[in-house]
Image 1 (cartoon, each protein chain N blue to C red):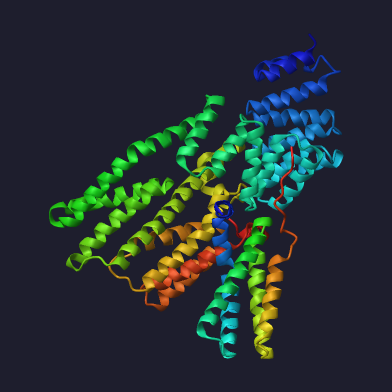
Image 2 (image 1 turned 90 degrees about the vertical axis):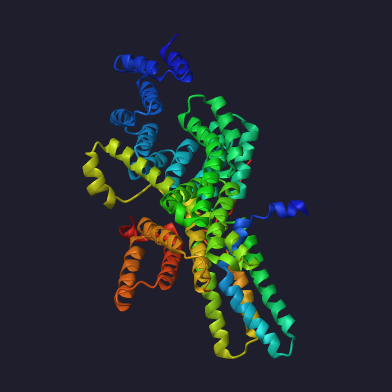
Amino acid sequence: MKNFFLKIEYSKLIVTFFAHLFVAILYGTFLGLLAKEYGAPHLLSVAIQIFVIGVVTYVAYKEEVKRHYPFLKVIGVNFLGFILWLGVAMTKIYILNILALVLVLFSIRYKCKKCVEYKKYKF
Amino acid sequence: MDIEKKLNVLFDLQKYKDVLELAYENLYNNELERELLYEYIILSHINLEEYHKALKISEEALGIYPSLSIFLYFRSKSFYYISSYKNAINDIEEALNIEPNEPKYLAHFARVLLLQNEYIKAKEIIERALEIDSSVSEYHLTLAIVLYMLDGDRVAKEIVDEVLAKEPHNLQALEIKRKYFTPKLKEQKSLLKNFLFLNPFDKESQKDIKFIKYYYMFLPPLMGLVLFLSYLLQSQRREFGFLEPVCIFGFVVLWVLGSKDWRLNVPFIAGITSFDAYFNIGSRGISFGEVFYIVFQAILLHYVSKGFYILFHSMKFRFQTRLEQQQNNKKNPIFYFLFIAPFEKNEVVDSKIMKRYYITIPILVFITWSLIYANINYYEYIYLKAFVIILFIYTGIRAYRVFWILTIFILGVIFITNNFECNSCIMTLFLSIIGAVSFAIPNNLARRFSWMKD
């Protein structure tokens, strides 16, 4: 357990958290509100928000630990999230936000040309 | 003993002047070994830091042996040391065209690219070198620096540790470990001692050790003195009002110097601000929220001071680099600094630490702004605001001129529309947004607009 906490790169975690906060809050809030609309209690709505923020941060952090995460990708992911959210809002089938969130998560995992892997060589 | 063996022995003993003497003596008599003699001469000049001479000899050798890639490599190295990176790249690319799989050339190419901020390409090149020959620790260390620059701190640290486990006296690895992976001053001191044990005449390490020693010797009593004076000033302002400039000056100097160790700096800042808050609030007493606020503010100010320290350091580094370039280019120093340096494209990139602050400082400023906006009135943020504004203007100039021009333009519009009155909240918010944008844009993107760059 102690090792687990020691292994976390906290500075990276904070930067990742802020870098994806926009898209995480966007989908978290919207999905939380959607759940509320279907009759879920307030606490569940908050839990959904926290869960979405957690998942987005976790996926992004895992990606950042493995390979380089260029700043343009951060902009791309947030922008894609926003565009997808707008698209879903236009269709008015709000449940599609779940699909959009999955797409955003895949875009975070996308290996771009500059996303080079952190690799070391044996002597 | 034949010349080759003699030169080899002298070179291993680092007697470069003797190597030069012997090599020059035989250079024009011995046609058979001339190529080898040129190599020794160039390498000796490079080790003696006589880069212009090394460059001249490499050109002479290339005139005789135009198809030999080794002299292109040496010329590239000489260009590299006199900070002429474009020429260095051209030469090493040419050498790699002749011998594409020479790891020595590849590693040198990666190092030049590293200084050019081309981290992705540098990684690709150094990995090619490592695939061919992974037994050289220097290549691993170059990869470590590249990975560090690409935010792969953990893997980079592992590589440096592995090199040190294999070669505990590797000076380059010790230097990298101290520079990038040892933030604590006391750990740095022990590493520096190791370093000095191996290289007793290294002036920079001696200077750094002295700095750490004096830091812990003089800073705590000086901080105590300033705290005492500011207590006197706040509690009996009538009698001790004359202490105000001393306290402000002392606070600013110690605040910036203390940024090396948060254990000293945060209590110092918290002490000074709490006196101020306590005597301003008076009989009402400080609430828990205000205590929390003072601590939070102290942490915030500590990070801002860290930013300042790095700023001064990078300015010093920049000034030194420019001075070296000026000496190498043999230009008139006054003419150079007044008319050439401001318009010269800066090829040497600042360290990653500076880059980190591009992200953290805008966030900190945003938090500060939101605190001001939240109407916490007991403490006026005049100094903090002034520091933030100076910081932004400096970094704006440093990073991307276009944002700086935009900032000045929009600030001008704000001033004019407000009848030349400055609303500090709007200005701080505006600067934080501009700063965040200008800081966050990566260097790769900025290079496309190189004419805008400082």
